[in-house]
Length: 333
Image 1 (cartoon, rainbow, N blue to C red):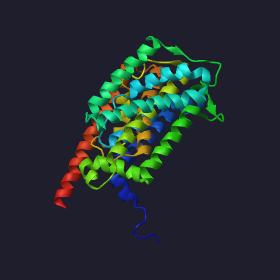
Image 2: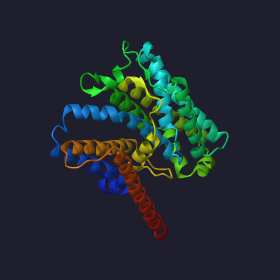
Image 3: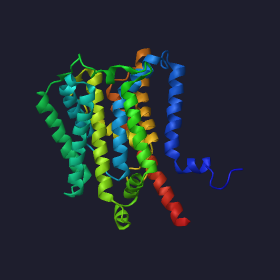
Image 4: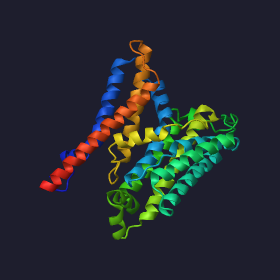
């Protein structure tokens, strides 16, 4: 027989209603697409969808860590663009050199953000906004404001254009490894518990003797590293470093994280639900493309921003109501 400590599904759903809801919505949207559109569930659409959205998934993973602490990172899109240019320049040396060095570049931007926020006491919004502008300008300077072609003779393009064992794009395999690693850190380590505690109350975490500054530095370095991975995928998949890419990627990442149930105030978040949030937003746009192909309606690319904004607004309203209900329940208990 199950004891009192056994897993209680109803309790889990009540405490993680939004995270559960995003998985239900994702499943419903997939079912809708399979039933409505021919070739929606085909191997080509499945592979291309995962390959393209792997960039947004990985920056959302880094953003999730940052937002859990109550922070924000507006620089991820520009850092991804900068890293894509660096990766393109390093492509003649192969993926084994370009990938780790581009990720290190992204982590250096993250470390700079952490230094400004922790040591200089600059608010995260301002610090990462400055880094965003600096990284974008730097990408344009070193690239001459034009795309940087990769070396097609090396193995660099394998990550963005080939499949692992003929099944899944290499890009999504790399992102899956990153996601599993971050999930393990958040759920099973003392560092992960500290990250969650900071979002619940930074001053209280300091009084408890937790290593707050180390954890905050870690999340911004992780966010920068994830942006570096996205930059390599971008350059490898498109065959060129893209200094003009990355615009509004930070908004996509924030939307995915919030849709996945992470509170903007921090203290609560889920890596798997963040992945589901990123996939859900990407799937909406994928369905719009199929709908355009049917000719019954016509949505321009600008509708993507409208829909993303609508998603974000609705989810924030839901979070606000949920927090008010929890506070009211806590006062009456």
